[in-house]
Length: 123
Image (cartoon, rainbow, N blue to C red):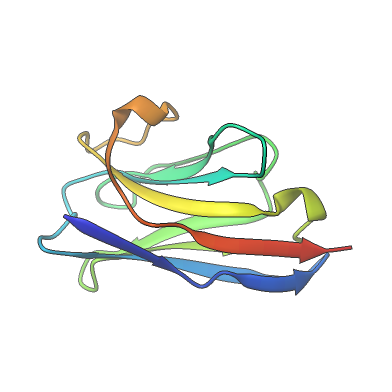
């Protein structure tokens, strides 16, 4: 399965963005999907993940209450709605599909990766 992340851009602190992750090649409706991010000089870190049917979502502590992950399996797309953005949210954001149907925080459980989309939050 190929994943395409989009929706990144430049936004002022306090603003919002919505990222999209669309699958092609085959459906990922049976897979949990996660978002990760990587800032310059830092390791890739977990942001949020959602179960195969959207029933369960998990978040990193520093985005909880500000970011919302959702999915539309009919469109083969997972979304990450980001609000109240902070400069420290600046990173390249990646989506990934897990081999599992339930969401996990470990990067090692994600098999298929998109190319990343840049999010820059100015102060």
